[in-house]
Length: 413
Image (cartoon, rainbow, N blue to C red):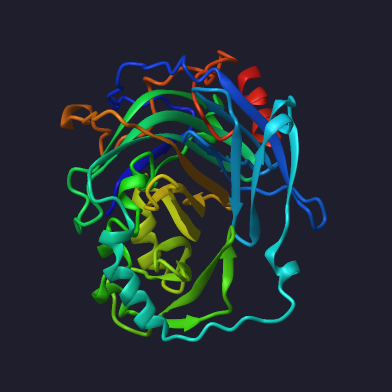
């Protein structure tokens, strides 16, 4: 399961990262931009799925802002978010430069508690058995956008972005052999300060769409021998869009395990029994095990203390065939580093975020020689943040206002 990326702030990588030829999607000449707020309090909503009627996707950033591009005039966009009613927008409203949208919390519409009975272990086992039915049974190719950021305390010291291609075989296969990632184009910005230099390798990178897809790589969490290590608890139902979900809390049992387990929530569609969302955090009760899971390599004199690792995975049904597909993934690492014989330690936060932006119709195979290496990072061959129109022809997660400011500060250095 371990695929890695290397954080080396302030240094250029010597690793050779294969890049596919830059395939500009000049056909994406139509766009809709907007901000999504909660109708209860007008707070910005992050991670809202935004889809055009012809199959292009993105998510909102932490400011609730999005911009989605399409190959044809956008006649409708559909928005969905856990805990909120879905929203479809069409017509004249889409012609505004930046539309303002409000989603209605589902809880405001429930006049009484709705209890869903069921044995959580039986529901999990049934959902597991339906994976071949609820997810694609053939190899598919997807475009996706990936961003990784490294913060030292509250300051960004490393920002990397890429457009890449994701190849996934049938979900009927119980392994990820043949699932690959190839980077098409990317850019990177690092702090030039020597004090920001940190040589650490942790779990993650663009290949996380392969390695951390819990439904596809089922030995990661959902296989019977793995889920048997957890206590399961049925919680009150929730909604993802307009669809009611079983919500099952997983908690590690007091069992012997050579690696740390996860705490978290698993969402399962009540009608289809498809896994739709997972919100997980690594159990930190055994710091040594957590370190072995998160950390791959460090300088000899550097002390590494894990603080937190979280993972959010989202699967969305496609209106064209009803099958669920990986749409969004976010991993976050917090850890503390200090050098021996120094008094003070420093906290670091690494966030990796990816969104699948389009499913390709044409059969394109990622060859082994073009596949992104397991232990490589978005390194030396990435472009610098100097072209303001770099992502003009691609769908991305729009940078938040705070990230834009950080980019500006790093460029001035």
